[in-house]
Length: 330
Image (cartoon, rainbow, N blue to C red):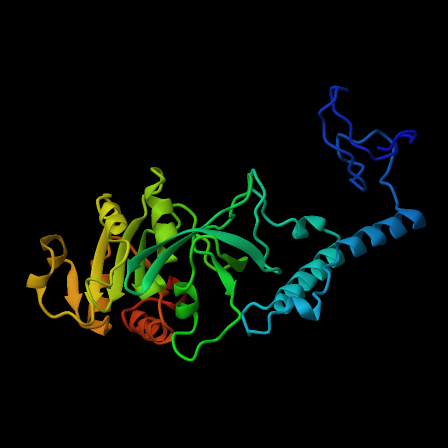
């Protein structure tokens, strides 16, 4: 209540007459026990309606400028996000429910990410994991945090399209002190502890990347008893990255790891610890059925890799008896 205003009919009071009771609520039914007796709900006058309309207009999403679109065909585009936010605003306005615009905000410190705008991040370190895989670390300024949830991803902006290698050659040129531009987060898979009996993670090459934070979030949570079967598909044994991390994760009681190598043919060339959990060839229908059948609980599959890999594996899962709502394709 603003200074100098009188108390209006229909305003809730603390029953004990003390502070800390419910805040002002207008238009409650007269039968509500917290309402002052013999006073009905308030009606909004013309001035209040104008103020309310102005408040809604201030909440309306701002349409991006043409210069904010990078023009590289990324999805979602800033204009896609604008249309999404505009639809949400229109729905909230029609229902007069501003809570529909609030979203989820659980961070104790601000995130530096924005889905609409590319933001600059300085590279603090680069580590070569295999001949074609790098681990790149970015510095976050001040007390900020990235704000990514397990399963989400970012979009990278690049200014040159190479004839061969595309992004890989651009990323390979990065070094500490360089700047890269990202926007996000994006992603339609949001994991909740104990949401599934077992996660069957099927990843090819760098498709392992989105599995890592989901896997780690489960093993870091003693209350999460989700079983995990992770299958990493690579060309060679040397091409498997994050070996130490995966080996440590496999020590947890609820985690199994397997590998499928398409360009290896001799178990004797592999370390003993890998021989009983490595298959040669490609991830096909027979192996998918074997993996699904070996799951200890009803599985939910996560699939990430090339477009061809993702399409093929989705078909194998359907043939193995999984419903379309029992897997997610990154």
